[in-house]
Image 1: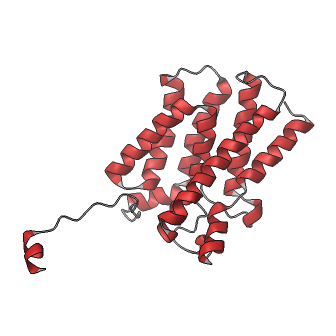
Image 2: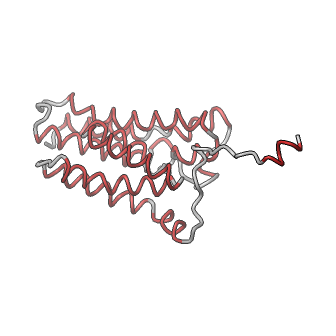
Image 3: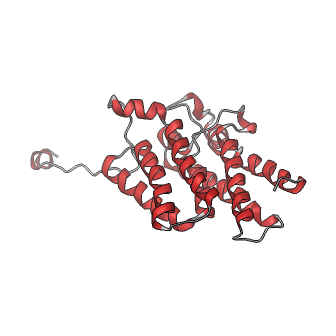
Length: 220
């Protein structure tokens, strides 16, 4: 599996992951570095928190796309799509892009937690399991309004879905799915601490309309 062409693909995957969309959009359009505000992360959630939807949506899409594109680089190899070697290369390329997002070459190695990029990776590797995980994320977010909690629960559910729902027999994919859950928990350690202290910020992505009281209406 280790040859010159695969090494080149790994470098490209890392460079794709290193595209700091949050940092570049923040600096170019808003003249600020989002890493100096909010949670201090160069990720989509912090961009939504600091700059709002107009910046958060494109950052999310770019981060998802770069993870998907990095995994898709496997098609430039000599491996047969669907073979164990092909899947193994997909996973390695995905990991390379994730490392690039967390430690971006183009942003002083200070990136985000990689949730959106990770979504792009799993969408390419196992789209059906990814869509179920997205559904779980949305459900938890609607109930709790915590993006961090939603991310962790959907990440934990991903290996369960891969192993028990789709009954995959590919060892590397099983290991990868478990590592995803562990990695997300590790990168969200501070969020876990804030959740336990009930200090975690709730998402403002889903705003509830305030019900007007009769007295308020008569006063206008």
